Length: 421
Image (cartoon, rainbow, N blue to C red):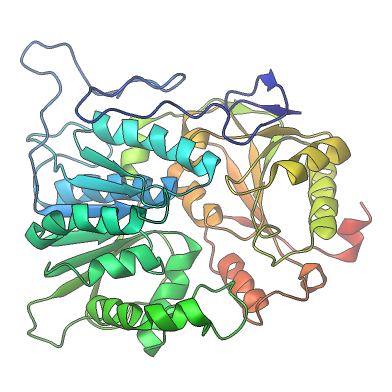
């Protein structure tokens, strides 16, 4: 059985179910069910909501809910840095906040699309313009999307991207003349991106197995190479700048301007949450990406649930319905399909006193989003025996690095004694 993000029981999840209707450009944002209005708004008596200052020169491209969340965090931080607002966590700005145009390059996955629509509503509620592109809606979609975005790309002075590994984004980067490029956090992928950029390597996702030199890779290679050059800092004195907005522990190469994502917007907008006595487990898509064996993963989840008294399992948006049904049946956990990124779900609550996760982005972001609460975050190591034969040779080292660099979390080595209960 699965439940809604609010924790009530519901029928087994069906792919695509519960996705909000297609938004209409220019219409006011709808209030999200279960999501409070911005806490610092007041009645319209001269001190009401401030209209956002238009910034048509800034264009952001996102393909996932977390990327869009981090664009909102970046805009919030940029507002404070430009002197537009007051202290980040008070929400008491003295001038209009930064507003930008966000382009959603919509994926196929129904759960991702659903979360993106929810995040698009929040972005509009903050005063940003959201342009939804069915970028993968058929064989002619890419050409139609690129053609429609070219005028915006030509006018943009600053481009913000969420996934430098995306072929779509790499293609769009070849069309812009923007002198300022900003990469906002895409979680653990950001760590790999910075490492590859520093070493001058091709941009290849960490979990991909093989050389990455298939027919499609060879056709796209010129665009990828151009994008990598655009994302490489210009020599000292150059007119092009590259920035990184991240909560991940990275060592950026010289010339990359790093700004720390402290999740100030999330803390100002939501919570603090009500904390429950039971623990929660956070799911991962390591099985779906072919890194971890499904049987070993389900066994580990069951062990963690018994050991820490967990009652709920927050599913990753890419986890398969079949696996989740099996997990619910074998572990007895209530499987929850979040309708927003977990940082927002946890911040608005209710949430468990302990959040147990496998190596993933949330072991770095949740301690920031939940700062000032009594919630603890723990991360469980991935046992090398769980890896599949098709896992990338880099997988174990990368996952160990994600766990080892996490701050303010409890580390749970998965030992044989633990497996025995």
